Length: 180
Ligand SMILES: [Zn+2]
Image (tube, rainbow, N blue to C red; front, top):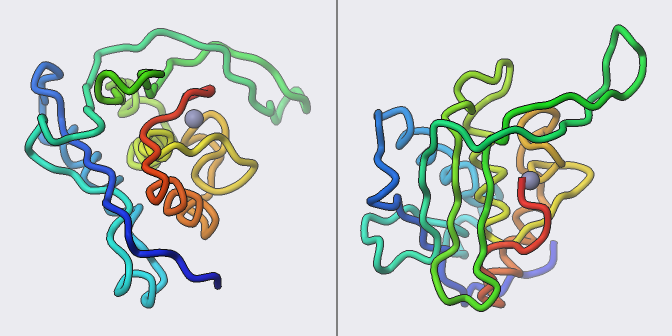
């Protein structure tokens, strides 16, 4: 494995005071998603800072998280087993990453409470995906950054963390592409 330069700071994420935490579940799912981004390789885990951390101090955060009852609907392309072909269906937007192009304000990660209703989606993975966008990651054919988070993905893979580390070294915050 190539060496990763350890001279980066974790991406600092906090809950926005205006996006009220309605229940503990909303805090827990974010805490667990942050934990999933921890280095898995024991040598990297020992040598490198975490890629992302949840802090209490909003003023020190580069990314603010808010929870919403709904974020509206979008078109979701999926494979229909019965029809034997890909179809487009409306689906709720579960998360979005709103990045200021000029960096004039913190990056905002909006999460929808519909995350908890979209069975068989694992809500932790959906948040993990959105945090990937907050770290500057775009969609990938595999790993946690697969398009349409949480429906078909297989977890964080090796390259997801390597890309995130390279973004941390460059100080990238947020993502300007398709962020859902
Ligand atoms: Zn996405």
